Length: 258
Image 1 (cartoon, rainbow, N blue to C red):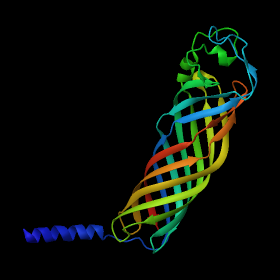
Image 2 (cartoon, rainbow, N blue to C red):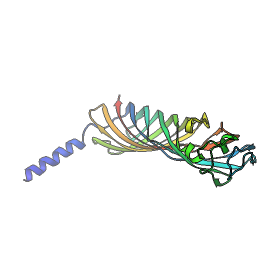
Image 3 (cartoon, helix red, strand yellow):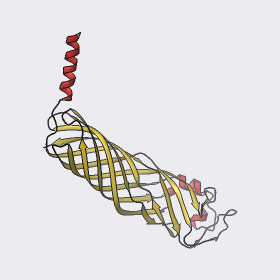
Image 4 (cartoon, rainbow, N blue to C red):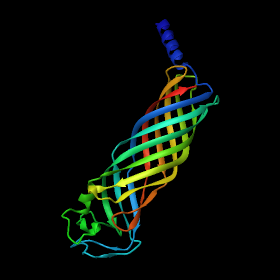
């Protein structure tokens, strides 16, 4: 029994003492899931007159410039792709440059408000500017959530790898960069937002790599990534709209060490 226990411990030690990371360059690629966070969109209107929202909001009701408005947007699970090139150091740190692309479709919009009042139950003509009622409420129209949000980002990252002498090496990391954020909001085929903006971006990461050979690792990674809010002009009625852009991603990839 003692011999079997010692043999098992020796096997485990051999596994954990697989080829260590050595100083040098590496390249990595990964793909995974993008869990885009909900956005509390908010903005201010320009001056305009409403469409026919009788009896709640009479046709032609004036809306003053600067009136606050907004709504909530939920996203489906999307995808993320990443390519990275960097250098490992003997002290456990590594640095890299990374390109990341992510995309998520809109699931639905809800809780449309103007001047602090929820208008989901009002006929959609009120915001479409139509003098004739459309027979569908604002809530029904925006619940048909067509559109998407995508990010193309470039980051400079710093990581620290733990247990570099073992086969399994957990790590943490952080990075800063810029991301081009492209947003399309087109509920019920009504174009509201269709624009892009480049913003400061940041990310934090945690993961673990497994050394298959002396030069090749596989890894899994969680990342939280965000940019400053993006602000676009509303195409349906005068006004601007700020959109939150935050995401959590789960990725799986491979890494070649040179």
